[in-house]
Length: 142
Length: 430
Image (cartoon, rainbow over all chains, first blue to last red; front, top):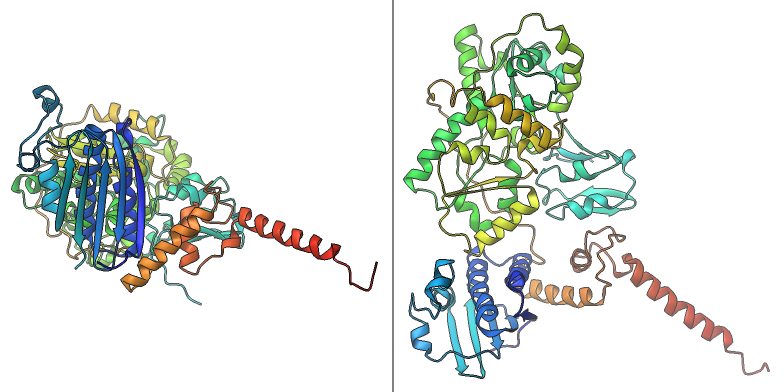
C-alpha cells in the first residue's frame, strides 16, 4: 500500500458520551472539502460513527487514525478496552451483549459491527480479551 | 463589470464597517471581510438571512420588489405569507389585516396558508406511498433546500419534491382571477408578501422550478410600513380570511408537521439546529421518523429576517387568533404544478482541487497551516475561523500574514534581526 497523502488523528474520550461522533463529523467535513463522492462519505461516516460510539460505550475511548490515499480511506480504531471474546458471534446481526433494559432505551440493537462491515470494503478486527481491540476498516474511492 | 445576480441577500457597501460579526454567524461560511468590507461568496450563500439579522449596521439587505411594480399589471393579487398576520398588535381578526393589505393597491388578497393546506394534503400522500426515502424532509424552506443541495448531497433523496405553499397559492389565485376577470396571464400580477430573502430568491432564481408563478416579492416590513399608516382608515372589513387553522399555523415552527396529523416527526427550527439534525440523519442516526420539518429561522417563518414583530410574540398571536378558525378551508383543489419540474443537482462547494491527489496534498497542507495558527477564531483576518483561513490560504485566496498574530510574530522576528544588525559594527570601527 502506498504512503497515505494525509493522516488524521483523533483521541476519543471514553468518559463523555456527548463528544462521541466528533471524529467522524470532522472526517466527513474533510472528505467534503476534498470533493469525495456522496456515497463514499456516507459509508465512511456511518462506519466510523458506529465504531466511535462502540469505543465510548464498551472500551473507555481510545484513538482513531484516518489514512487518506487517492484510492482509499482507511480508519484504524484502537482501544485498550475489554476486547471481544467471540468476534464471529459479535459480527452476527442482532447479537448484543446489552441487557434488555439497555435495549429498551434504544441501544444495543446488535447492528454496530454488522453495519461497519456493510458500509466498508475491508474490515479487520484484531482483539484480545483484557487487552483491547483494533478495528481496521477501509472504504475504496472509486 | 456586470455581476450576474443570483441571490436576494446583498451588501450595502457604504454601511458596512468591516466588523466581522456576520462572518461568524454565516452557517455556510459564505462571507469574508476584505479591504474593510464584507464580501458574500455567491456559490456558498443560501439566502438564509442570518447575516441580515446579525448586522448591527444594517449593511446586509435583501433585494425585494417595491410597490411601484404593481403598476405593470391590470389585476393585482397579494399573497401574504402565513406569518403576515402575526405582525400587528391591535388587530384581533385576520380579516382586518388582510383588508388593510388589499387597500395598499391590490385587487385581491389570497392567503398562502391555503396553498399550505394543499401542500399538506399532498405531503400526506407522499409519506403514505413511501416513494420518498424516509424520513421525508420538508421542502418548504428554500434556504434549507439550498443548504442540503450544497452540504448534504446524500440527503437530497429525502427531500419532498413538492412545490411550496406560495407557488400552490399562486396557481390557485391566478386560476380564480382568470375565471373571474377573463384577463390573460400576463395581465395578472401575483405578489408574495415575504418574511424572508430565501423566498425572494426562490421566486427570482428558482432552484426546483423552471419558472415561478409569482411576479414579485414584497417584504413584510415594507407592507407593514404602509399598512401602519392606513389600517385605521379601513371603512368596511372584507371577509378575506378563508384559510383554515392547519394552513395558518405553518407560520409557526411545528405547524407544518402538526398539520400532517402524524406521530413520528421531528420539527426543527434555527439554521444551526437544522444542521445538527441533518448531520445526524446523514450518519444514519435518526430512526423511526416519517417526517422532518426543517425551518432555517428560529421560531419558523415568523422569525424571518424581513418580518417586523418579535417571533415569539407573533407566534403567540397566530396561535391564539387561529384557534377560532376551522381546521381546513374548502376542499383541496387539484393543481397542475404540485411537483418540482427541475431536478436539483448536488452542488457542493468547489473541492480544494479538481485532481484528487492534489486536493489531498492541499488538505494536508491546510492541516499544517491550521496547526500553526492561534486557533482563537478571532475573525480579524476576515475569515470566520482559523480553519477557514487555512482553507483560503491553500486556495490561494489569503496569506498567512493576514493573521494578525502571525504578522506580529513576523514583525517581532524582523525587529530582532534589525537589532542584531544594528549592534554589528564594521571591523574598522571600535
